[in-house]
Length: 355
Image 1 (tube, helix red, strand yellow):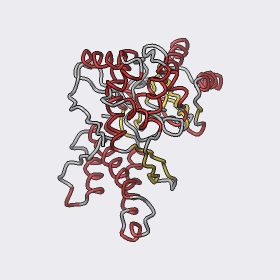
Image 2 (tube, helix red, strand yellow):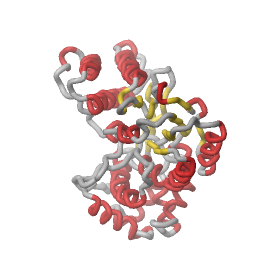
Image 3 (cartoon, one colour):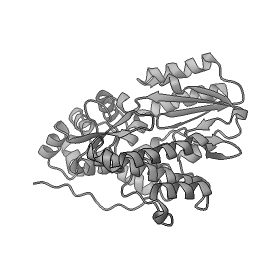
Image 4 (cartoon, helix red, strand yellow):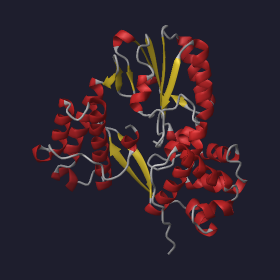
């Protein structure tokens, strides 16, 4: 049986990321791509044409479920390699408005994360929040093919097709793979540029963290302003989640991706409440009587725990390790015996990108 062995990775600087990106950009046909990924062509085709995913649902505090599609270990290792190389490509084309899923590199002048994203809007009189619905699933296989056929990739038709297949599932970006975040950023480059142009025209500030878009300015946003933004978002194949469109004044303490804008970004009460709800949910689904009924898979419960740990560590990141709320949340999750232990997720997940 053929095994793909990922290379050990170290933190890179911008130059090293760009050099790695050159390797990916030079692999323009299927043979070169297979060589770069340490795969025989037959194996690459086989994996791409019949990808193996494990699907499960993570429970939401509101009673719903979130679908997660995670690839098997072999495919995930290949996607990790692709992600590693794509990060360097995105670094060279990254719009100033983009703050989500940005790989941290050694000589970065500014760390881009959920905190620095919110920081861009501090002090503005009005804030407009816009959210895109089913973000990853809205990015289709054909968009990935077009991405890889166009500059700077300029891949052959076959290479673009198979790279798109390696990073998609059921004809769209899955939620739960190493490559979906970076590919969503690459696909959104034209969107970010057009929205940035609109923001500049009207004197707004615009940033995007994944599917969360934030606009801020000193004049109140109008219905026409929102429609202009909505029209551009539709143009690129995305749908606005109308329930999450919010316009707030500075005095109303607007939130940006879970952080409330005060003199500096801080955690909102709803964010803290959400963590508490997640902990209650975790306690519920790990009760013996619930586990015995097999309502949720062990993997789903584990993913929920990782998410909670990441959120609690984010509280520490924003407020410091001596913050009372952080210490109380840590104790709630781990109990009295775990109060002095560090909370460290066993795997890298979405929350690791935030800090």
